[in-house]
Amino acid sequence: MSNDSSTDSKIADAEGSDDRTATARGAEWASRIMTIALGMVVPGLAGYWLDQRLGTQVILMLIGFALGGYLAAIQLMAIARQSRRKSRQSRRKSKPRGIDSNSDSFLSPEKDKQ
Image 1 (cartoon, rainbow, N blue to C red):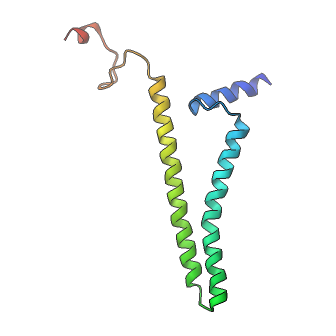
Image 2 (image 1 turned 45 degrees about the vertical axis):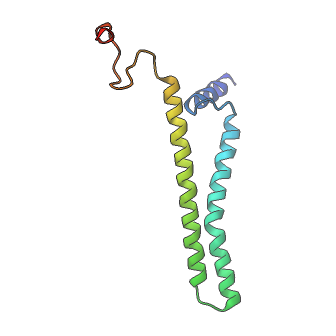
Image 3 (image 1 turned 120 degrees about the vertical axis):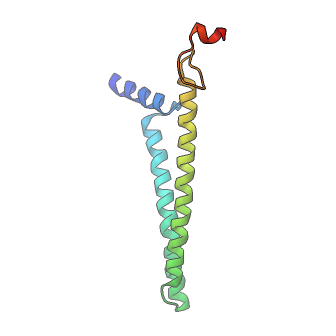
């Protein structure tokens, strides 16, 4: 049991200050994935349904799937942007003191005098 909690704390440290359990984080990711998948498929199926009702070929279905792919790409970029922002924040918090932000080298007393 203690191994699970240490693993959870390591995962939380890697993800920033997220104090949720691994199951809760997994459920969040499953929800994101399902939302993206449905966002890709539903417009295409709606286009297929409209094609059947209006007697058109497959044009509305193709437009629907293209729209779904576009919406999924937007959602994936938003997730990537959010993840990148979280990793930057966690790196800033874990940056050791005494590091020069310009050169990423340890400050020496000689540099401070100059």
